[in-house]
Image 1 (cartoon, rainbow, N blue to C red):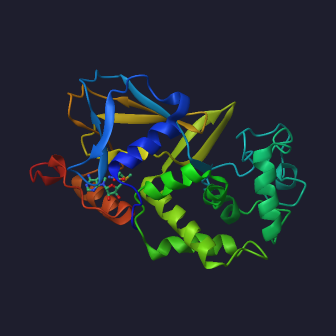
Image 2: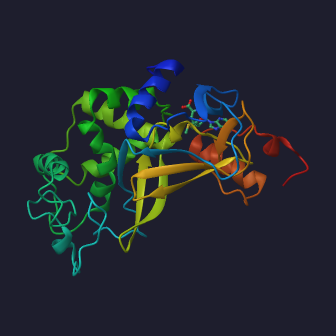
Image 3: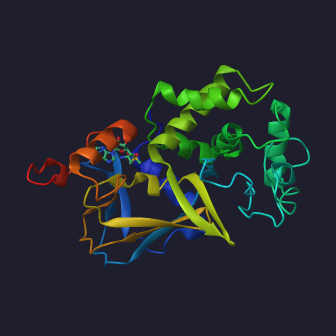
Length: 290
Ligand SMILES: C[S@@+](CC[C@H](N)C(=O)[O-])C[C@H]1O[C@@H](n2cnc3c(N)ncnc32)[C@H](O)[C@@H]1O
């Protein structure tokens, strides 16, 4: 899908989106990549273990996978004490979203609550994973104009199968929107998620959560089968990227999208099927490495 910004414009949007998290003098810059599209490059020698940046998410929501606790609050990620049934976890207004009592009055929940009630969930007694999973995408409606520009500047690989996620969510509501411009915006956002999102476990309070999140800067890290950087999540909404080895000035900063212990064939198949590209890195090109 077309990207609506030059590399320079993207770099500026990312800069302003980082806000207070922008490093005083970053060790990196955004530039065109010989691997693919845009990437992040060291502009000075970087030491092993050095923190490169931290970034707050643009869009985030529960993965709603079977292995996650669906009763986790959709705003603060805590699991309220004594929350033994879906009914106890759900917002009493009938929006179908699990939210803890302290987050119910927040503006963030009120906006989502109003939208979901307008769409009218079919089942208000049970937490519906398909409706919960679409929340990260629905949040694109609450982005500012500048954040929308950033979303549209991100690479978004198209795949007709992705529309299934919208269809599955639509089945959970009486009045899910069907206007073409809304569906196009959903689709674009899902494509951006599937191209760039990080799915990660992290601990919030005593609760282990599983979210998928979009980070415009971290999303620029291209894949390498011998990467020089890695990430971890803090508080479910912040990503921290650090160098795993010394990175000389001018080198592209990369991470892995696959498991490094997998064989070359397994990594190639995984990247082709889930990320839609054939990895061209030296490790994948070396016939003596399995
Ligand atoms: C998360 S984005 C990375 C940033 C992207 N280069 C951009 O310009 O926005 C992932 C996409 O980048 C491309 N990509 C990343 N690593 C690659 C690699 N090792 N070989 C080929 N393409 C790669 C693929 O098109 C993939 O779908």
